[in-house]
Length: 257
Image 1 (spheres, rainbow, N blue to C red):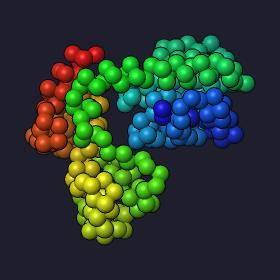
Image 2: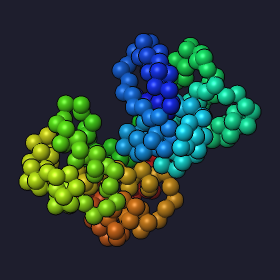
Image 3: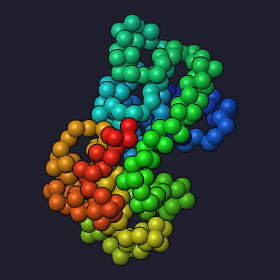
Image 4: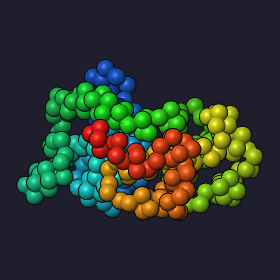
């Protein structure tokens, strides 16, 4: 399970990780952010299953972060851990659909209960999603987060994940990352056994599927939001990679859930 901890005191963030990992039956993957703005950027590529956040943080508060998070990851579970017990904060947190509002010092047992609840609900969540052949098509089986990948490959993947809306090409990557186009192509093929265009489509279509399932945006709007710039290119990518269409995927998803 992927857990994102948004907390401006790193000792507390690491303490939360230690509490969870000490009792975990499964190995969880953690990411950390010092404020809501940073957490929002991390969430876009980390795709957490659970977020544990403070309320009062620099640049963007936890509540502001949760509100914006719901626009891109509406099904992500959220737990608030904070030293502030003001009723207005609790009220707003409940309105945003958080799982629980825990006060510091942290009730370790309650935190573990909540984490286990999220973990136990994951198989059901994923099984519902698996009814859509497009989302869990073999096309989406690439693992972009292996810790043993070379640094240059990680740079390439991070750039694509953050900038997929742009007109990305090998030449553009070469200029931005100071890597030779042939080297980038060889690097991707060596570790993923696919082409650069395949990886780019993977990132864009994954985001397109998320928008099709969780928003009411039109297919034309989504094509621009994921970097295809026109509806025809999005249709072509869906047909080529997923043997489906954006409209068919959306119908399939909503009939499944």
